[in-house]
Length: 112
Length: 112
Picture 1 (cartoon, each protein chain N blue to C red):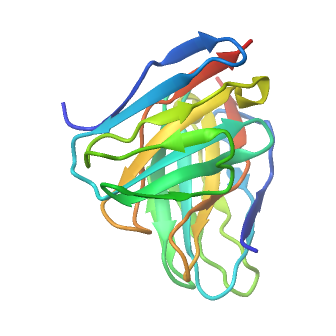
Picture 2: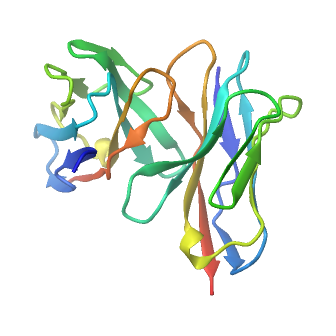
Picture 3: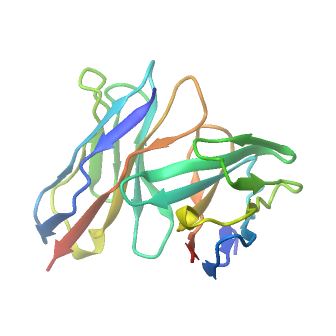
């Protein structure tokens, strides 16, 4: 089915480990986004990408790395996980900037 | 800077009650305004939107009117159902940029 998927849906890791969260969309949308959702903060933008090989920082990029070698994929890597990165991570895509964003189901990450 | 403020809740209502979730914003120019809904265990879905002053967005019995004079975009529904239980996010897209700004979300519980 067409849509936007994220994997894994749940992940437990330890402080200092590298973790990669995957995001895949089948609409060929140009824009893709990574958000984290925390109580009291709503959604905060981590990184976004306007097209393949084009990425830019959002509001809270520290500790994260992204890449976009293909239009349909936008992985998010935590290079050395910290407890403060325990959160729910949402990937989203949109056809162009500013129009409706479509969200994936989220990845719940726990860093011990 | 740009920001969105909304009542955090939780809001608990009985079925068929009237719902209002307040949302106010700070932004320069004329942002686009959105309400997203997040059902348990799922990603965010667009509920409705308005792109200019005095526009009314509506969907599934929910309505919100873009009020430039009060910088507000309050969400209303005349008769809520148990199936409306979810977290509701108010968001804006600035007129001078592409990144959305989300409010903290309001959890709504509707009791039978």
